[in-house]
Image (tube, rainbow, N blue to C red):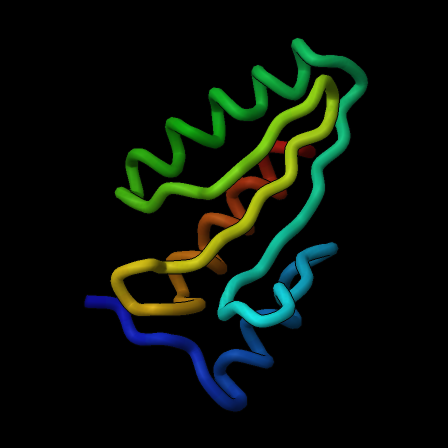
Length: 96
């Protein structure tokens, strides 16, 4: 099982992310990705899904046309872990 991030370790990990925010009333982070069109958004979701599957760590997400809203939290740990930070970084990298 992966341990939840706390204290300085949590703050240091969050500081490495661009545009991700902590979710109110939940131990999770979120970000909205905006693309030029639906095809670009769906292509990114496909690439992100493959990365998530390799990690065995799956996002909560919602897509409307060119926008994908993502929430990350490690359900097994009951909150934010390094798995979430790693997946967030991969998603950012895939988005360019």
